Length: 487
Image (tube, rainbow, N blue to C red):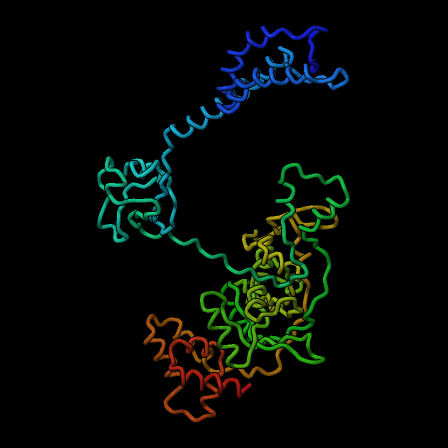
């Protein structure tokens, strides 16, 4: 088809002339006027080429005179397809240019009742105050921080109130919400025995698999193992008169004294007893000023307990002693131990016995596994499962939680005075007002006594505790200095 003939004969001109108007119109639409003009001049160029072919020699290369009609139609079809695609693209561009543009959202900031700033998106400046209030979840909006210029009309547009993109509007401030109480800092008396998670909580989790040794060992990390222990205190030397006087009425008190040093470090000396309760801060402060320590506690039963050799601690007494030891260790900042803290059990006419609660019981009390809500007899109840003899239980024999300590009489007590024996302490306790208590305390000291008489009258620990909030600071400091010098 690229030669000068068609089917062995010269290509008829009628094919070219018959298709010329259609091709000319298609080319004008697709390729422009330039292509159309070039196509209009095609017959003349082909005629000139035919004349040159007639003048050439037979051996010369035949010249292309005209193409196959099918090729011309294919070319026109391609141009028409290109033109159609161009029309589609032009239509899309025109539609995008003439389509109405979406309104740009307006962001308005609302300062809430709690002071927090939140962002609300509305549809342009033509949005109403009501729409802004509904989207922002506000009851009432104001234009100023003092909440004196309200946005009262819900039908008003934002542009009419000069609320533009980024403007801050305000809600009326309410009363500040109550602050949640801060959790008390946790003190672990024996960190080596601490359990960071509960066995019961671990077992209550869903889909917990404990069929592997690794899972079982991990589960056992959150349980206390009740077992035998070695006591820290071997002998508790106490003032029998002070303990007997405190044992007249049931209660729990602090044992004030000192701990042995050097080779005598396992001996505790109890020189005074003061009731535990609301004046604990004064007890610890006075003990420090007088050169003393809180070395244990006294459990007064208030009635004869029978044979002193058969005295045992009840679950309630074990829990109370463990809690007192935890508090004493926290105030002394003695985490980790060892910490000597004998528990003296006394009753009128029955003598006294001493015990020592295990470090595990103190740690269980700190982690609220062993609470003070215990029965007066029987087994101690724990809030979490503990292991006793290889079994998980929540009822523990209290004898697993303490050991007996030897008791001896104190040779000489430097803290004895006439404050308790002379009746001044009873008068001070019966006084209803602070002024009456002050008069009792001043009468006990006397008017300008000598240093020796003053020392003998103020060394009593009960007097020092009661005088802390009554006497002047300088007088109280002199009393504490005299008691420390006497010791």
